[in-house]
Amino acid sequence: MPSILVVDDSKTIRNLLAYILKAHGYKVDKAQDGLVGLEMIFAGNYDLVITDINMPRMDGFQLIESVRNESSFEDLPIIILTTESKDEDRRMGIHKGANLYLVKPCDPESLVADVEMLLSSL
Image (cartoon, rainbow, N blue to C red):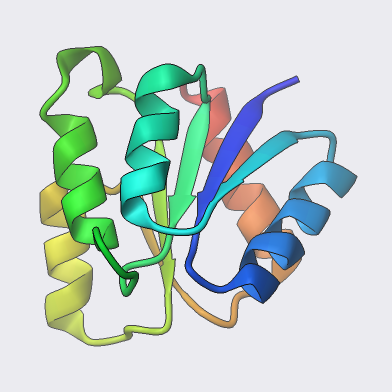
């Protein structure tokens, strides 16, 4: 069973994503900000990360950059799921190392399809 980490400062979003992903057979852990998420990634064994951008203490861009700076995590699939829809944010997310950049709200079935696509490419 693939393991996914959801990093978002909104408890509602964390719980909603966990519900959707668990319903499709994934194991899901949750982190309330980028710093906690980074600690969990380095300590855990995740197959994929979904992160927001705007979070306290460490934003999603900083999280992705920190993860990508560790060679053992260079192939870890990362999806940004955010309300930020500007092209410059999208470019920044991909530049930092995200595999996909999705804008909230997103269709749950599309999200699951994206997760499945990224996991199948491992």
